Length: 129
Image 1: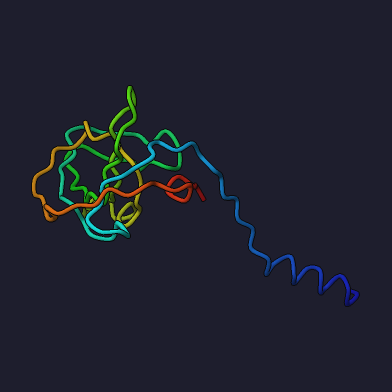
Image 2: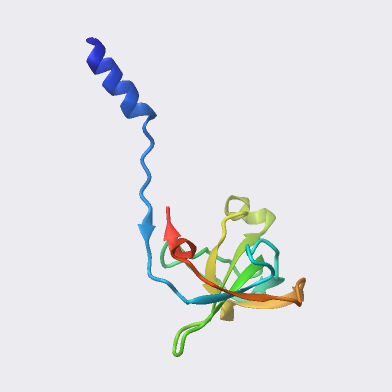
């Protein structure tokens, strides 16, 4: 095998490709517990199953606990979406994945943050890997 071919092969194996997809914004503003949206606003329980239609959303199963990190401020005529992550020993593979879901599929059980801030969303809020 020639050196140029080996080098090309090594570079190809080391080069990681990423396919980031820009998705449409779901809202222009969001409600968070702090300016970075790092604090959990509330804990909710899923009232029904929700299947993610694309990579911006998370799958939720009825009965799962959901940590809510932000609440999108809906535009006129738009649906109400929140962002969060699921918690369930039964669905460990989904824990820690943050995504959007309709607010209508969960019921808030406990609020952790009463003081909230309204901040604009960015295109990064709606990117997909």
